[in-house]
Image: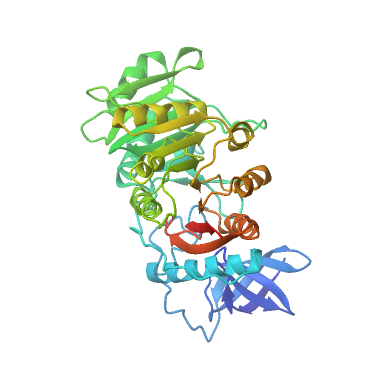
Length: 427
């Protein structure tokens, strides 16, 4: 589509540099304000264009926060957006982006604390990777940053937990040596062969889907992944009839959360976030509703502040695990397996406080309406999508709630994603 010279004068909330050509905004990833670039336009829309950086242009004034990326796949793999920015500057950008999002979406000016930092690398406790054989060799892959239907083969991921990083080459080698066959993805949406790695309670769980290992080599595959050099503690992969066969190293491990169960991907920041929520200045502490409760980690944490805690989680297996963990720990949590919409349509209970941690899309309109009707003295919203949080918060603020605090947490270093907790009070 052509190349142009561009001066970057701002940065978007999606971590893209912004320049202008004949008044039209041009968004360019991996660039920073004050830098001049030759860029190649890859997409033209009526009001904006997208481009990729080709080479710096003289005079090139390097942004003082620019650093060398640590990952060899950066700029191609779609997992990270900010490895070219110092970690200190990432935190500054993210705070400004949160404020800007509330101003743009909610048309209100807000203040917020400094972004709570985290370890900048090896923080992700879960990753999901497609499995392919591009040249006959087993390869884990990520999606291409600009071509999501294209995969990028990787043998490492610097933001993944150290145990996951150590497991990747061992697993690829074992899949090759044990002649694993990979089912390709289908147009129906089935993702085909893939693996899920999750570190939970200090143990590494590895699940392989849509693969087939010859019967005579299954024991060898398990032995390889449980070798002294392997960090893996639990394995599951398809057996006869498509059912999943599970294996544990040594003594039997506690059952891991389902691979699709919601858990925060950063243990360090999760703990800081939940400590923050537990320590907020609630006006009343008799009863609390924990919405979208997942496996109930926060529900159990909040029993130290509230006399009655009810956790609601739509996924049945995840809710069952939350109930078991509450019983095992002795935490007084009532667990309900249903959607928030159904819960609010059926319950007549009132709560002094409510914590909502919805999926990325935010709260549905029926849930927002129910929150306004219930009139809890305190509402806490946790979100990894500032735009959805701003939309929801502003609607609630129009129903006699005021924003008391807005605290961001860097749950996802090296990316533009941000976790935040908003505390609203009635009156």
